[in-house]
Image 1 (cartoon, rainbow, N blue to C red):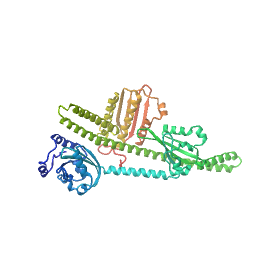
Image 2: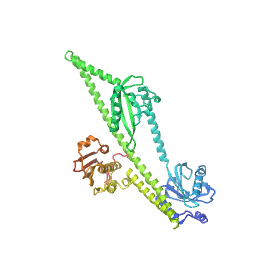
Image 3: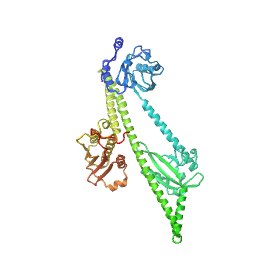
Image 4: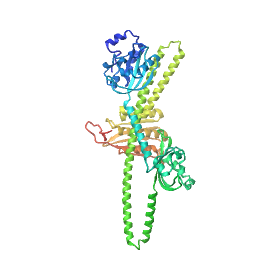
Length: 551
């Protein structure tokens, strides 16, 4: 895109009487405008004591797009032409930034008038000379609305949990101490929140369970397996007992560290008593079956009822499993979206900030004299530190969500990942791709890429391999992706017993796309991972159609 140094004959004539920025800054300014996706305007202060005399002398295309105001409507205007803007702290902040000579983040302001569309803008100002000031801004209205929506959703969920009366729902810290308490827990257990929070949850167990160390064993099992269920007697505040059905789920942060447990308890005493009564009736009927044939008919009817109940329970179980799988798919999608957002923020915001710092340091370096050797060495050291920071930011953004996957597609992303893995581990890694162009939808591309990442992680951790080969190919109506390594291999039965979370995660990704995932390994002879995903019909032009139009 072409960027004007200054715009408008009258503006240039007025500026001829003002000191201009250094030639170095002017040389960098067009490149800065061309590369930045955020809005940037160049202001000149005509009266050093009056912030209202800041005049817009240039603006990039992003500034016009964000404000929905063409550049000709912005150029030549002073802050005095925006009365509503003068009512905000922004003019004084701009003047203070120019006088200090240090770039400042001015935060977020809500603004809109006849020229600039209404919205919330994140603003940063950076001095260019004694009279020139650059202002970068970005429309963050959608992000703020999304954060507000998330907070509202979390609040509704909290109110829902606290309002549940039928179940005791509360949280424990990693040691088993109670940290939250809902109304259902108060009704079921008899304790008020002020009486119970901070106490160990073993207070609900009868003496015989405490002697067998049952509370600690349940927490250990939940931490190990992620979730565990239990039934048994529990004790209320008044000392009475009830039969409880309990589900404990381990809670972990994004790094996998255990941060506590969620505990759900339901009183099933009546169900237990009914079940015991039913068992006693069955035993009595079996004793009298030879004497009273009518009892046999009754038993038969009861068995039919039980079968119907079991069938209904199985149907409900299948329904719950489908719902959990749908929830897993949604969580997977949300996590990918969040990774993409964070990677973009790191790349765009932090990366650009580091670039701007490096440019400023380079400018300072060129201004130093030969006698200022200590200061020059300090500036060069800072430039090297910024370069290292930029490399680190790019690596972090790539690990979260490689831009290659979104910009160039799956084949390029697989090759890039293989090259990165080889350079990091020293293990030779090659990728064989189909000769024909292959375009996949986002869900399939992401699943294949993440499975490839997890496979390489397993190779690096466990395989002791020297070579890895990945192959992506299309077979009629399906995609087949294989990863082979020449490492130590494994015993399938041992891996099945361990219930590796990495393998489970890859299997779930395949199942969410109606695909199949399997691993084949022989101790000492390497491992082969095979992923098969069905494809939807091909539309005209050879493009793969999305199965879900909402994605």
